[in-house]
Image 1: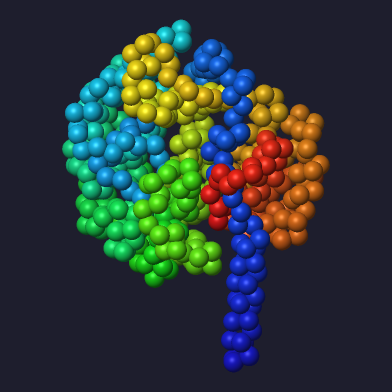
Image 2: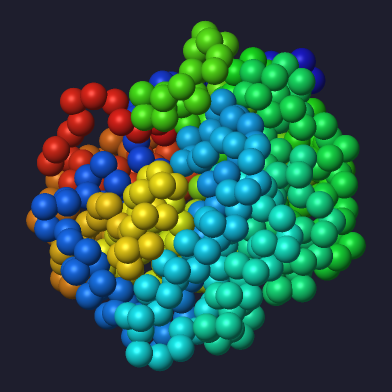
Amino acid sequence: MESGKTEFYRSNKILIFKMNSLIDKYNIPGPRYTSYPTVPYWDETTFSPEKWKESVIRSFHESNAGEGISIYIHLPFCEALCTFCACHKRITKQHSVETPYLESVLKEWKLYLDLFNERPRLKELHLGGGTPTFFSPENLKILLEGIFATVEIAEHPEFSFEGHPNNTTREHLQTLYDLGFRRVSFGVQDYDPKVQKAINRIQPFENVKNVTEWAKEIGYRGISHDLVFGLPHQTWEAMEHTIRKTMELKPDRLAFYSYAHVPWVKGVGQRGFDENDLPSGEEKRRLYEDGKKLLQDLGYIEVGMDHFSLEHDDLYQSLIHKKLHRNFMGYTSSNTQLMVGLGMSAISDSWYAFAQNVKTVEEYQKAVEEGEIPVVKGHILNGEDLTVRRHILNLMCQLETSFDAGNSFPELENALEMLKEMENDELVEISNNRIKITEKGRAFTRNVAMVFDLRMMRNKPETRIFSMTI
């Protein structure tokens, strides 16, 4: 019996050592691939607002004849600054900003409507931020009814919003449910008081419990909680406590994100704590590995990267039926081609091009008042971009991709050669022009995708611009 125990512990030590070695080897800065090319590699020299409009018109006709279109609305206001947040936001307690901003969003939407020669069919809509529940239920209703009056709602629409547990009211949930919303995501992050203080997100479990139970009582069928690992002062004991408290509420899905520490990009917001307070690489590895295992032991299935869901949830069902999609909103169960981003800093995707709006409220409102779609930069995808984008999307959503004469690219042989080492490390399997990420390789999905990132390979950054992959 003792020799059996000894062999068990020896085997586990070897597995842990091997995984630690792999993480040390592959934990490098890399994109999250909500797009390809990624934003730092957009070629603005070939982009113009006119070309953007042309791509939108083309994509609209293709999308509207199919599943429909998506709308993302960026609602940037927050009453307090969370020091872990990398989103574009405006901190204010003045709720007088609500109406003028929402009026601008509706004016921007009218500018897009003017490009279409038929009524859009709306399949997917998401309210992000910032803090969407900063806005009153009455004002959100005015915004949404203004949009719904101009569209046809597709069959089985996917309407979702991000709710802050501290200011989401039952009235918010009921109002949005009555307007067709069935999904809500609550930002939990971590329940440890020391972590919450460091990230300036004081949020008692009771608040999360209240909004989750209200949502269930009202009838929401897609309740999600966001958890983040790698935050300052975070320990495995605290992370385990957070996961087990989350299980008391049993959300339909979970996002288990790695904290993206990019203060050189986001400035003072992510300098709100000492960087020495962040977990070490080894500590962060344990948060990820043990957290993932615990979630799976508790009945959650890993979907794509960073996401887990119960078997009944649409996210898992879309994975099974190969309809899982990834865009600037993250993973979605609707595979729409055209996503129109409305609001300050919002990013739009026509499949053939990307465009980002201006990044301040004042610039945004000024542009739409002058009758201009308020894009400030973008990228027109060429044929090679479209091919590479499809492969990276396949890897991020289905954990595999394949090649034939119609979807190859010049550096394919180089990419396959680079994957040889990952194949030796059992992270990928390569056979018959097909690449499949193994279960062991899931943690390194971003690394596998990077092999195909031709724009980054041809122009490697001299300074760090991405967060770490693990």
